[in-house]
Each structure stands twice: as C-alpha cells, then as structure tokens.
Length: 454
Image (cartoon, rainbow, N blue to C red):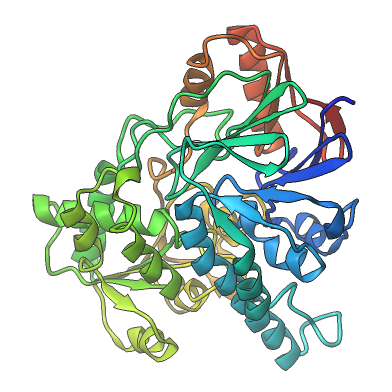
C-alpha cells in the first residue's frame, strides 16, 4: 500500500499547517495548526477534520507557533489521546503559547457576549486555557538527530531548522519512503537563531514558501530600527510594536539592546515588553543555549533590557506615562492581545509610531496597517491611524526565496517530488517555478484538502 499525504492546512496559504500521512491503516499528523488571517480561513478552525481524532495514531510537531500547533487543544478535547512528539524547545514553548491561546479565545468570546457583538448566542471559545493545559500531558520531547518511532515501523528524526527555539525539520521514514517536512526555515543570517541545518536526503520534500516570491533586503534590523527610534525620541512619541511573543519579541529586544550599547539610541529610552507570554519565552533562551547565537550572558541580559509587564494593571498603567517610549506587545499581526489596547490609544497621534516587525498574513489587522489603511477597527470601534507606520523588512525569521533554494540545493540528490506548502498562492507558485527551472526538480503546489502519493 502506498504512502499518501492529505493537505488539511498550509496549502495555498501560510496558515493552519496540518499534513496527514497515511500508510497501511495507520495515520500520523505532522503539525496541527490554527488558521489565522482572513475570516473564511478562520472559519475552517470550526469545521471537523475528515477523520476522527481517534483515527490518528501520532502527532509530530515541527515547531510551536500557533499556525503549526494551535489546533492541538481542540484535537485532544475531541478525543485524541495518543502522544504529541516534538523537540524539548517546542514542548517548553507550547506550554506557554497554547494556554495563552485558550485564554485569549475565552476573553474574546466574553467580550463579544458582553457587548452583544456576536451572531451566535452565546459566542464560544474554540477551546479554553484548561483544554490547552490538559493536552500538554500528551507531549513527548525528543532530542535533535535522535530517531524515534511514533508508530511501530514509522521512524522520525528532527534536524534543527533555525527560525525559533525548538524549530525542526522532520524526516519521516515509512513504507520505503523518506519524506522531509521543512517546517518553517530560519535565515542563515538571523540575528538571534542559528542557521537551519542542511537537509537530509529524501524522496519527497514539503518545503515552506512564506517568502517564496521575494528576497530579504541587504539592510539588517539594526540599520532599519535605529533611524526610526531616533525620530521617535526626537518628537517624544510612543512606538507600539506588535510582536510575536516567541522569536520576534526577543529579536527586537536584542536589537534595541545592541543599539543602546552602540550609542545609536539613548540608553535612557524606556522599553516595555507587555506580554506575559513573551516575558516567559525570553527566560527560555537561557535554557536552550545551543540553539541560538546568544551567549549565556546575552541570554540573561535579554530579561533586563526592558521593563517586563506582567499584570493587566501594569499594562493599563503604561497609558499614564508620557513618551518617548517603546512598547512591544503581542500579537505580532495585531489580531488580538494587549497590543490592541495600545494601538487604540496611540495610533491616532502623528507623533507616535507603529512598527511592523515581519510577515503579516493577508486579512490581518497588521497587514492592513502595513498597507497604509488610515483607519483600523478595534473592539468594535474605528480608530484613525495617524501615527507613522514603519515596516521592518529585515526582521523576518523566515528564509527568503534564495535562502530556501540554497537549503534545498544542499540536499545533494534530487528528490522524486517537492510539494510547495505554507505560502500564499503567488509566493508558492513562484517558488514552484524556481524549483522546476533552477533545480530541475518536479514541484507541485497542492490544493487544500487534496490527497497525493508521497
């Protein structure tokens, strides 16, 4: 019986990654992500999977970002009882990210119900903080490069992918096939993370295409960030920086710290990290020193280069301060979280600044602000955007198209086929064309819901 893959997410879009591998009556899910962005994509989170959770024999995660792990609490609540396999870094991050995701969904549902803004009565969270905490009991961490069998006869090995703590590419050996899932690939020149390792040999490759149609600029994040913060300080404004709590928050903090040390910006410029999740994540860098470029001293220093804001009262108290100051807050695409309160408060003043720090999925508030929209809707209110909008094009934690092709090329032998996933249609198709023309490998952009031989 042949091995096949059903693309339940991350096909034709950068979100909701879920790849179901089936062989000989067994099923394994690689990644289990939430759909984010456009409403028609988010609605997929409420649709049942084409098989019951009981029919899945194992789940393997590439990394902890919610578009790869955020559906797990729902899968477990609906009856998935077996193991969730990942690296130690991914386990540690999911223990922070997933309960927070459940908590945010409970808060959003409560807000909609309180203000009678939902078409459903009552509005319900997709899952709760408790659901997320329960599913953490099913996590089984495995070291990089150490093969294990999530299903008897199915062999899995993790190799470092850069990107964020714990991020891995997954090599699955089953039914005589070697299938490689790139996961999200980091950049070889990342400020924070180590470069991704060269890929192992494989028959079939699923490669991400987030930046499949573009190259990162030559400029680095320090060169982009310094003049923006200098302008902000001169006019006494407040910079609101939507950040992903995992990875981006720490990279921007490290960059600000370096700029202060270099004397490019004043050491006295107040910086606040207003995200309990990002605060917890920052502490993990000292526990996973082999995976990033920071020394132990630099990892410890991360926790002291900003005022760490934990409670809601501390967050609200920021509104009583005057600029200049920098507020880093989640979520990174401004789809929820405390950053919305800061945007509502500060986006209307031309002295202030909104700093967009990386990829913004189409349909998200962050993408709309980055595109220059002059109003944004927050908590049912239209907010004018008069603040200066700065987009850091160098802050991405993803490999660009050239870097992705270089990673594939280092494989040595051509695989039988490449599936281009985790990219918007334009980016995925552009990468497909380049793989076919430059590498002369067979490449396909799979359709959502399709099943193809591996």
